[in-house]
Amino acid sequence: KAGVTQTPRYLIKTRGQQVTLSCSPISGHRSVSWYQQTPGQGLQFLFEYFSETQRNKGNFPGRFSGRQFSNSRSEMNVSTLELGDSALYLCASRRTGGGKNIQYFGAGTRLSVL
Amino acid sequence: KQEVTQIPAALSVPEGENLVLNCSFTDSAIYNLQWFRQDPGKGLTSLLLIQSSQREQTSGRLNASLDKSSGRSTLYIAASQPGDSATYLCAVASLSGGSNYKLTFGKGTLLTVNP
Image 1 (tube, chains in turn red, purple):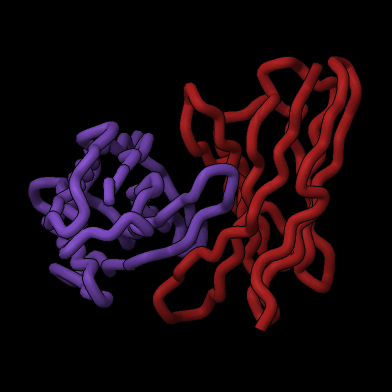
Image 2: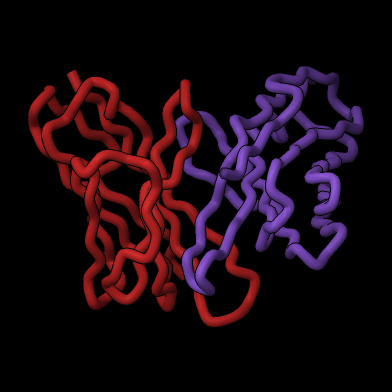
């Protein structure tokens, strides 16, 4: 069974640009969450999607947005990039509707903003 | 607002030593608690998950305990090996409104096991 797949693995952008990151969850997992990891702030929750709807959102500006498709794949978009957006962006999926609710993480997309 | 603290921030031990990593959280109304491992430049690997109703979980040389009332969890690693070197992250899950699931992470403990 394939794990959580994130593409691309690395991105270099300049300030003011926008970027889209992609996440394919484990087959059968309908919940996808996004996290930002920086050396200073650690891992912080961005948002969670389930059945194409955003269910929960962390404390990030509106420049950070996402969406989920009918096949549960998710994309995250950051507009008007700032230097501080440089981070490792991690996607996680979980099976809902009972069970342990273990979140499985992808390898991440490392975004560098110059 | 849930806050998660991990102590120590870094730990260096000789191979074969038993060790304990600590995690504390401020809000005891948790859904579950997970311990993860992160290797440099990589994603997170789930090690153990403890449901809020459980006291401990074991997997191989790893044992995690949970004391909700005191807001503490520990990860015990027996007979440490150089391959255990990584950052260990504690994450507390909340489930609000019956469906809004969110993990709050500690900053992690960087473990180095020396041969």
